[in-house]
Amino acid sequence: QVQLVQSGAEVKKPGASVKVSCKASGYTFTSYGISWVRQAPGQGLEWMGWISAYNGNTNYAQKLQGRVTMTTDTSTSTAYMELRSLRSDDTAVYYCARVSGYDSSGPHDYWGQGTLVTVSS
Amino acid sequence: EIVMTQSPATLSVSPGERATLSCRASQSVSSNLAWYQQKPGQAPRLLIYGASTRATGIPARFSGSGSGTEFTLTISSLQSEDFAVYYCQQYNNWPLTFGQGTRLEIK
Image 1 (spheres, one colour):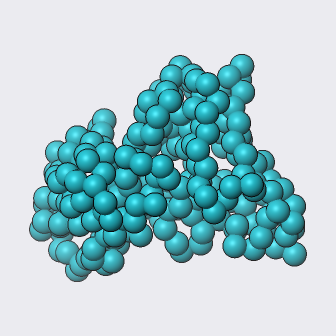
Image 2: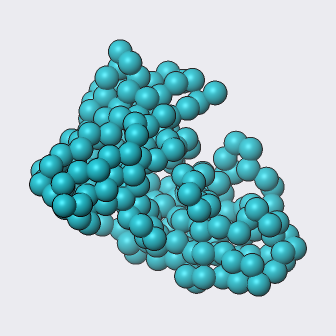
């Protein structure tokens, strides 16, 4: 069965960086993309960006350009999202999600369990 | 950026009744529209994609319709487990965007 298992909760100080992992299993990793979506406390879903696990192509939300980097390691079927220069308003649950289509956008059919990132001094 | 607007923000419906949720796009997204359900403390779950195709394992009481800029999610005969927050998402253009959500609550 398809599973996306994310790394554990993180507490970071403002200005620091965080790197969240998302390990995929139960499907051919390189046949799909991975999106990252975050949700601030009590708020809605915010799409952060997407990476093709096939060729590494990325597409980021403009507001995060320059602060976010998404990568994959096909040898371990793991996707990573690094966010730098953290601010208090980056406090959120971060989700990875599988995206249908190996090099294009599509519906997000499987989701990780979420990783809480807390930014606090 | 395509703005997705959902209405109403909150919908109060009695169990067994029908719920109709709306989603409007600021420009055409063709049929590249998905609906997700999210319960407290859980990740979102894909319900509908391609505007009207149910995802694997989704009960037939969930149906989606529309194309272009106007979309509807209908839940016939609401069950207790259906009370949750629902989001629409367009995946026609980068950046992908979500609506702000509709909270479906028990009346």
